Amino acid sequence: MSFALLVAGTAHETPQQVVTRYNNYKAICDGMGFQNVRCKDPIAFQSSLTKTLQNLKNQETVIFDKVSLNEGKAYDNISGIFTAPLDGIYSFTWTISTTAGKYFVTEIVLNGQSVTYNHADGRGHDGHPMTTSHANIKMKKGDKVWIRTQQNYGQYAHGANWCYFSGTKL
Image (cartoon, rainbow, N blue to C red; front, side, top):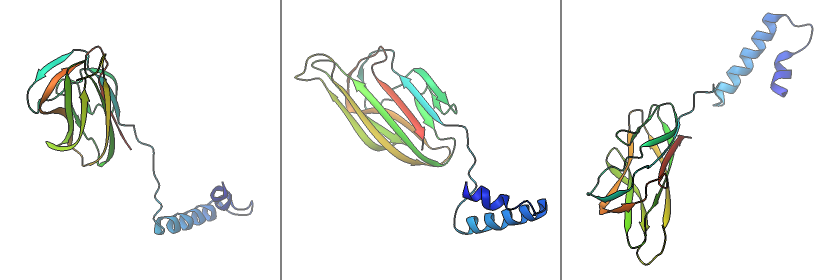
């Protein structure tokens, strides 16, 4: 508000004087590293697994097929891959639910390189144990992120929307 008051000035200024003063303040702000930031369309997605997955192979992509949000259209529910439309830092979360006596170990990968893991282990448990993992990843436009099984540990992932994968640009 003080900036607006400084630019508005007094009633005795001409419009050209106000514009000149604004440009001077803008030059000072730009020189200090402040930039005119405009709002952009958000990039965010939320997807879930509708089908139960069993006995997946080593490094097999987990395809979260049901999309409930896909702002920016960066997540592909056919391939299970998120492609960064812009450079930036992206935040991803995924949850895996398994069943008693089974396990399902996954990893999030950036362009095929492992970033971090999620270990859902139902051995020695009743019901459907669930685990969630999170990763903030610096990406360049065109980089790809997806969830895949880690080694041959894709025994059982519960469908019916109990497992999900989501992300957003920070």
